[in-house]
Image 1 (cartoon, rainbow, N blue to C red):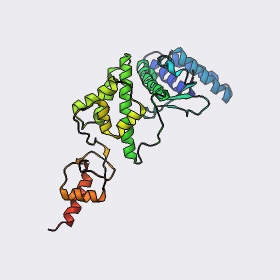
Image 2 (cartoon, one colour; image 1 turned 90 degrees about the horizontal axis):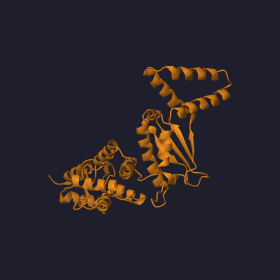
Image 3 (cartoon, rainbow, N blue to C red; image 1 turned 180 degrees about the horizontal axis):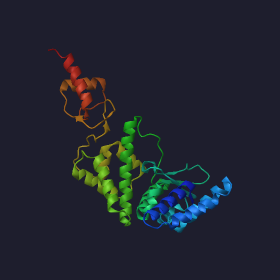
Image 4 (tube, rainbow, N blue to C red; image 1 turned 30 degrees about the horizontal axis):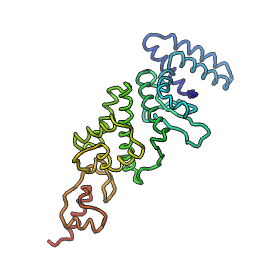
Length: 309
């Protein structure tokens, strides 16, 4: 498996490193880099660019910046036969960090990792970040996981975002649990995924959330189909997690069955006349399914307007 570093990443990591050393009272590496860079300025543009890549690459390796990736890859030997090349690029912001694979029909499988240069200043944190990402990659490449790329999980952007958040958090719970069993999951990561689970399923009982956590963190790896089903249907999630006697009501941000807009406020009790009005417009709707307060208010207002004084 060949590892390739984008020139911009090499430069960003090395420059940040010598600046940190200079701020800590060691100006020698910065002066040496400035001298070597100045010598390259005497060359033509193409030769200068090649020289800068070699200069930054040598410093990158000298200071051990490639070790976290090599260690993380070493723990995922199954990727060696599935990925031909690993390419690292610099992410200017944390929100732009990502890991992706080129399409399976390509001549060779390439794993692209876009990561912030600041992570290289903390090798342990970088190592943990890469380990998490590579477990995701191993899942994607495992036929038993059954991954299938879907451009959308819903036609509505807001609902699509909610479903992707649910899928992501449940998957990350599983990844964190597998790393924990290997002694590779720090307490901070466990706390992070727990917090995200609580935020997404805050209206579920403490017992229900604990069982969901246990199923995905401590249990066997879910399949892609499991994650999709649980993201779309809370009842499927409760059934998979073995949650007893839990009413599978809507979670915060779920789409209203009538207007389909995400809602955090629900009306479960409606007058019989309002129920009849809703069912006349939505015959497939069941009164056992809560609707959002906005739809409830609109139907109650419409009924009150039509009712005699």
